[in-house]
Length: 244
Length: 228
Image 1 (cartoon, each protein chain N blue to C red):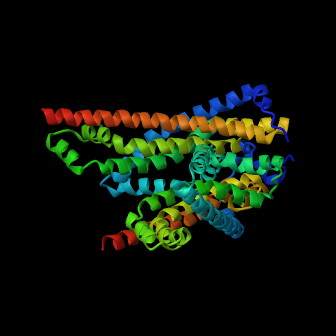
Image 2: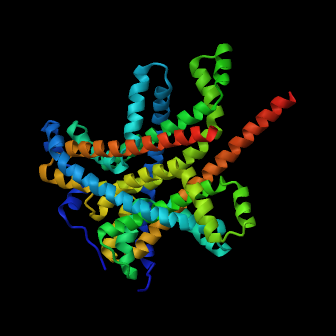
Image 3: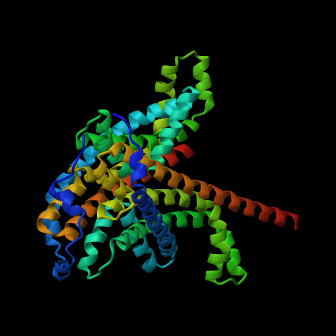
């Protein structure tokens, strides 16, 4: 199947701005204010996308981290290659790969699902690396004690290792979530109507790109800044608890 | 479905052109980011709030907005300021600014990792602030600077794919052009993924090499000092 992106937003977003008329038009913040309600609705979709993608990332990332720590050698090799591939190629290309190329092998998703899958599979590689760092910080004594008590492997992972790993890595995982939120701006390229795409739709109608984009950027800033502040706060709390 | 990688051979010139553009834009943005990032870091670490406040706000603003939003603001905003620029330069400018904010934080962390006694000693020996910075602090921060800076360079190359959305014919745009004429998206995206992968892997290797060199230099330096 071949996909085409022919709706209004995509066409105009890839065209040169009308430079001559623009120079004479004054920057007018009232267009930013006017666009806000729709932009905020777009931001809600951005958050929804990010939460869904992060959930996928956490689930998949945990499996990958466990496979990397305890799997057979071939599995570990595959996992290492996957992580290297994801970290070595652009997210935008991965999004295009999922949306345009996977239908060729029978995996046909709507833009929204394709976006969540691309973002989730991308972030999972980073989540797995974060969890690996957390795994390394678990005292060996805990695992030895579990073995001595003959706890089954499932119990060892679910009750002893993973809860500690998640608590240890929480600040870094929140940071990863902020990267996922940033990443969602790119799924606008496959016609998902989130914050960025909403902005494009608005300025295609009123030709006030700088004003509308500024509004979108302001919302992104508030979102991302609060998430990173939350991560910092949590890291500080954890540090204080650790030193006691 | 059969994979037909012959599209790579038939359109190799376009892919080569795209790869060259990606490399050129990323390298230029890297240079701009390294330079502007150092200035921002100096402002961020300055004693006077007159320098600190604007540097800090610029860094935080750019780090907390997706690159595509910053790119579009530059792309659509410049004509409004009466500035006409080729798309290529708009791409380098936006990517360079974005990189500068991240490099500023990498510089800051690296500079703060150098014990403050070093610059205090330099001061008491009568070195000027500039000599202290370039002869004492910057060389010693290198071991802390190179690993995150390499990572950031990799991020930069990956982020450059977004420039395809402002019609710059980079590797990603080349893929879209070939895809729209051959209807072979799977092969096309596999090909450019491998090219990007090779590019970022090369950068990581170069970074690792620099790191080893740098470590070796510092190690031999301390040995000499110990012998003397």
